[in-house]
Image 1 (cartoon, rainbow over the protein chains, first blue to last red):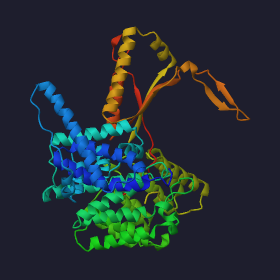
Image 2: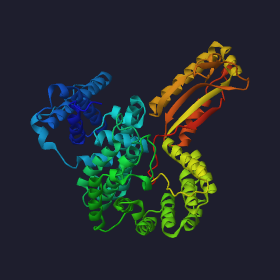
Image 3: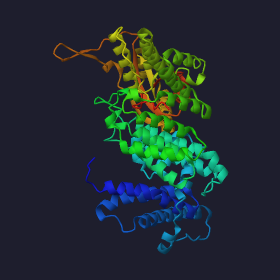
Image 4: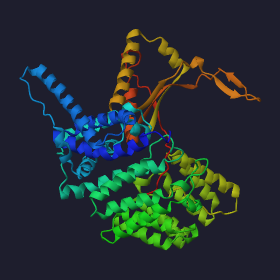
Length: 427
Length: 131
């Protein structure tokens, strides 16, 4: 990619305008699916024309106009088709006067779109794809590239998602307070998944692939601006910032994973840490502590330690105990066991892990073995540590994790009796 | 999550295939086309390739100066990859269902093939965030 092309300024502008334009068009025609197609075409037209002709004076008006024209064309040909079939008299296609364009804007459109895309009827991958396109203003090609599937496959996924929404007959309007309460967790989860996809696969991919973590942060920011009263969305944004702050330090020159306690902390992004911490402090003051706020709080405790040995593990342990009450899950229990080991010693941590052996949700999951490997290593039982790291390596579905775990096992075997503390690759 | 669906066969299976009747071959090709279309329409298709005949397969290793040393002699029991499909799905069960569909492809004499399909996970470039 070349840093000087005009797309650099056009892209963020288009991404910001996309949901606004879509909101106007979808509300006017009460047809989210066709409106979304029309806006996507208008965006592609802008991508082509603006670098040559310059950004129009009123870019939003331009996009709305082009989208409406496409929409009208689609409706005309649809009506022509119906007329051929039914031989009915001519119907009038509504035309929109440009003068109306600007009065039509509703800042909450983005929120309507977000709730619409994160519809419970959709599969996770469809939800993510549709959210990135309709709310994030990304092109199908960009999304396909980010998930390493062909563009045609992504287009198909998006089109199926839109069909499901159409079939579910969700009206294009703000969800009621009750719907909002019910569906907000799903919305937050989707935003979190987009972030996680981007953050976790940032390895060596910055150049060719879209910055999904950055996109997730941007989307969460705009959602937070509209849901300012919700402390969990602030918590989620804080979690993203506090995690993303470590991005430059989490992989080495050969794209190998670097665990938290081995990272060069001077590479951590101080501005992101400060912003995340401030956001979190504000969110926590509002009461009703949730899952994302607690995870953000744990990330903040890690981030504020200048050296790994300065980490306030008793504080982290207390936060995991709260998390187990607020949002219990086997992964939380796993992380809790690490905190127990750091505060009370590895035997106590291993004891906690025993409770997870019978948990079907973790059966065959590599992380249980990875954490055991780590705790046995802390205990000085290198033979068992090696065994568990190796088992974990055969179970993980991630290539960087596999390399990391194999290297851990090899390192311990070579170290023989020289115990050398290390922690699992996960953060 | 991505899975690869692999269709393997022994040399004798490949030779048998060359003696299928025209109807059987046409039926099989039609099935494969339809199968591909289904994958694409359902938004799970990533890639697919068919491989050349096993008699062209060579085992290559580097000699002392790095030069390629080729060998084309394989034991009778050796299984060769005939082709593969990579799909991006939501769960292993979805991948197994697609593999089962593939396994229903018609074989010789119009019978359902019942061919087994090897399903393996494609590793991601992701690491687990651990949350």
